[in-house]
Length: 118
Picture 1 (cartoon, rainbow, N blue to C red):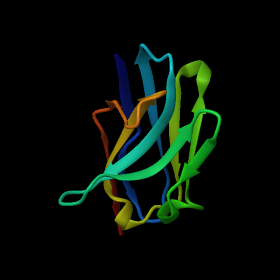
Picture 2 (cartoon, rainbow, N blue to C red):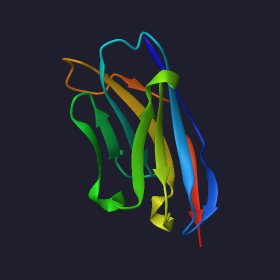
Picture 3 (tube, rainbow, N blue to C red):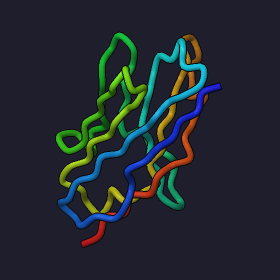
């Protein structure tokens, strides 16, 4: 089992910044992908960005130039740096992990709320 714990959410004004963290623990061998998703009420969960082993990082077009994904392997932690936040970035942000050879995310954190106000 893999446990994922997000932190760093909160309330911020438009144009502000937040940095989310996702700490992984448990049986984290053979994890090929770590990703950030977000979800707002009434909408499907959407991919924000991902780190894929051997392929690097990517972020969705709607956050490109504003959000950055990184990881600290020694701390087993993934980060989502969010700059120039917009009201439409308001959502619950989730960290997820996928084992190698498995097509979908098998592990999810509990989520952390990000609220951006005007």
